[in-house]
Length: 596
Image (cartoon, rainbow, N blue to C red; front, side, top):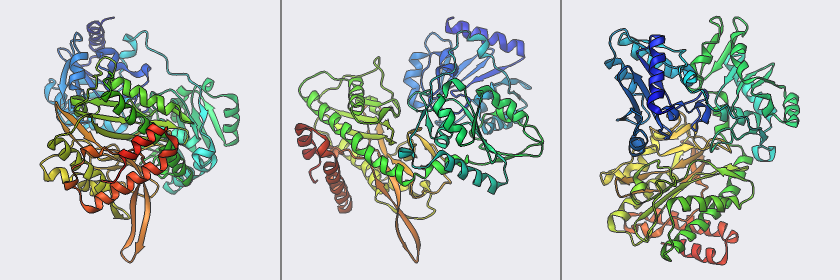
């Protein structure tokens, strides 16, 4: 079925259901960042494969709302679909809802499949549409009827994340969750986000691209834990271990009936931003609902000593792959060999695969040369890959999953002698990385309060960047993990304090459309620093080990303290990575890490 025919079939079903508009989001029942093929309805209908975008269909219009990261890609992929590109003014906002409210005729009906919308989002949509005299119809699955050859839900087996890596047993994690539940007066905790479930049970899977997760739901209570999952995904030995920890298995689809049969006057706790509206509708009216951040989200954000030690080991392995890649780029480009964005992405993945306990990439690599570097979340493909030349700027943002941790690093390199503007832009963004990395801050500080340090040098020159400064990083889970965030627009909760044990990126940047992007991203861990009569103070310890291109640094823009930090950092990079490199690579790194 061609895309216009699919759209026509959906409009036919809209007429049958009495709907004036229908919304198709980029989400699934678990709010995953990467969507399994079985729930990629938006891509199936439109052909647009970007990670963010919402389709709205009316009787005489169909539009895809997406942000500036995807304007070029969406414009190309939507050709022939009869779906128009609508450019978001503000990224990650539901601007299609006010548009519908003001565009539709009075007393219109808007349909959604509420399995794919959180309770919080449905409540927002209901409020906006009702204020304009419209009605939101929530239980309208039109797409399954039209998409007759839709892929099945992934059926891959789960595997154990060993205690030597996780640091805390499944039994102790469950006990912690139950203790917090009891403090809230709740008897049940509903978990629907896959990284929370995987963390809690010390299990991992391969159902989601770039995330070692498995499709499931989970209920935690004092009387036991229930994992709702296709039982074929649970190997026998793992099933026996789960039983020992009072974890029982029920079919994935049984979550709805379980919720419908909760005892009267019981209390259930869940996150309205994470749990889909359809599940909440299953909960009887007599059951008290307590809303709050998932207990597991707060617990897993504070990494234990075993996890932190493991991540430090991982940084040596990942840093070695980075140095090997940067050395290889330098030699290939300047020898006249034809390399591309795609070949660089493959090369660093190959070097990572040589390391022990490597499990795969943690996100789609951003391997971007020249003007592609200004496309903030550009995802390299074989079709759009540019060849590298011995001039201009190259930005590589790449990460990996290992049994002992997850990485996310960005380095920008000059493939020729950079000009004054390039050096100034790079250094001002780098000063932002250093400003946060060198910060001492009091207990209770929020990420948005330190964001100015990441941007001041850029603001001084009338420059800025449009994304968050830092996000949490999961431990062999999702590379973007809340609740902490640095900035006001990164993933996470701006009201969460930055606490010891939190793993957070620091990634200020500058982008010049049509020319290049500059970003230096490191992973840090928050550690205790000092305590005195003024309180307790924390600081960031930088964990990432990869050289920063000195050719791009304008030393005149740096303070003495910043130069000292960079020199000490580069010395540590060399000391910790040298033994893992060949003689040629070690010689290259020695030059790359010489003092400024």
